Length: 318
Image (cartoon, rainbow, N blue to C red; front, top):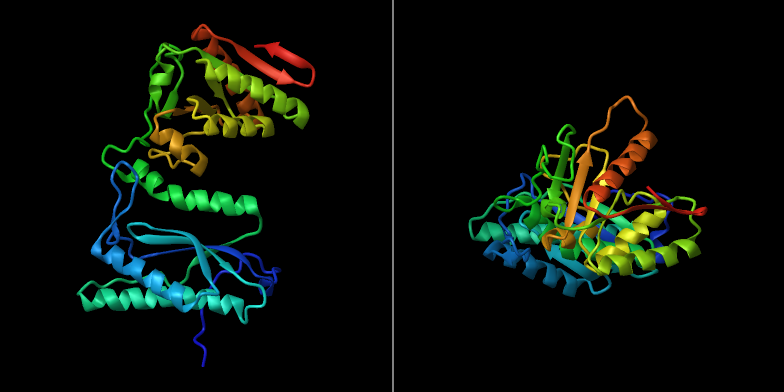
């Protein structure tokens, strides 16, 4: 008789017999890092226990060739992988769940033979990847996970928020906090404050973004909220070019900041500063963003640079 396998069906309406791509993650309970260590460089170094888990994954992949692991990483106390499964697979959800359970069961059994006792979480996290873009983002997340771990959990973690943040470009009478390369606010770099309207047509935004990126390549440090659709596209272009930048938010940063996947490499290269200016709780979120844009314009001017607002009506100097 088939053993019941628990799982999360995030897409209740999806027909799994069509095949697809799925992201799987599960961890030890309690969480303790027996599978290896991650040095500051961000490369996972497998322990003997980690090598046993890696060997188990390879064996299970050979036993179930219809389920193809496209990308995976073993972390100190959990595992991430992206798997594809074919159309027409009988009992696809059962097959996916059984694969998870066999990795858990056999890795646990092998470790117990050498006196190491572990418990895996009962279930697993799964997320259907329904497009090429999502597959690419998930693969990037899996690949960069060790580096993100190193940034957050290493000795003297660089993700520890500095507050209050002091800089010749910031008002001493306001409470600022930051995480990352605070040297970008030393006053030694010209900061280019950028605000791109939500109303910008895509065709116009692309041309403006190309011009902004070229100007930043000549030594300007962009500072922006990167909140509007056009600003988010600009952020991605700047990341792809490894250009140092300052991202401002009106929310309080956690004591240890957890970088988003697209931020991880910039943080590791010391090319990103997350800057927070906590606003009065009584104002609306839109007003908070508006005030913050004015604040970063003042920061740019204090660095003897410029602040520009790009809208369908033209370019405005702030």
